[in-house]
Length: 262
Ligand SMILES: [Zn+2]
Image (tube, rainbow, N blue to C red):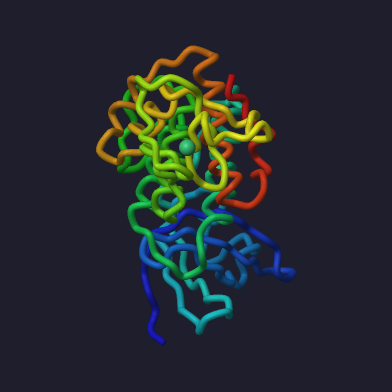
């Protein structure tokens, strides 16, 4: 097979031998791919110092048949992930994005738009942009916002974003004006009438559902930048989005324990 060129984010690194590594990349053209990088641990290699966690690289690879590791032949650094030095939320937010890209996507299944959102979200979590993705100003954005936007984008791309407009059990429309509270369970929003006591921990108010629903619209990226929420509202947004993410993943993402959403 002939060599392929693409752009990718390094989402996982593992030692393979004395000198080689297995690199998991989220690439623009092939989605998630696992590659063998021969000699990657040597100081002078074809990968230079490009293969760091969350680096964005231009790569050349020799694709192998399904199941086998692709062979990475070249990696050129396009940009590093640079969280602000004293913000663990920005750093862990980057790791969380890597975890979701790894856990929620299938190998060799391209989603170029998801790749672009990941690049944009990592740029928003970085102090300065050394790449094409724009950053609004010198002060980093509240880490919670790019994290939230990324979560909604990945759910949308993998088809796991719930329909926020109607109760998934009885079909009652969910609007910000309607009374009562709503629940998220089994991948959908459930109205107060259909809610069971055991869903109580994922209870959210209709207004929050409307906000999250609007944020999940890819046309509304500017809305997120202007988003100002009270601590109590953030708590509800997190309750809603965390429950959808956990449902999609079938477990709680590891990095969530390290993120502070207050
Ligand atoms: Zn209902």
